[in-house]
Length: 132
Image (tube, rainbow, N blue to C red; front, top):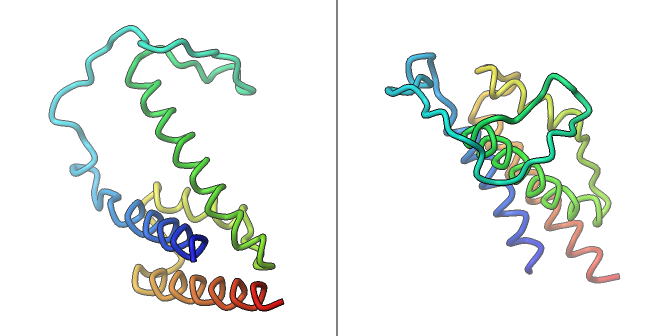
């Protein structure tokens, strides 16, 4: 039961995040310029891409948001794998990239339907695993 709650939360988060993307450039623009400030948390700036350096608090916050989202996504992908349902991370990443680019190969209604089917598949596989 707990794993179904995790999957529901994961899928709901995916729907919420993709549904909250701006639909045009004007919606994505901030009304005020960002305040440049010194970083408030120690950051290692040792990244495999040497050109990627975190210099401001806003950059730290954005990076923290990204890593937190990714870690929760990874946790959400662990359960399907544990019941024998493989979710290809490359397609997950491509979907995220497309959403940030404002495009998708699947309609919002289609995405909702596919995620509902995924949730059903996971529930069936979990039930089958629990019966074994």
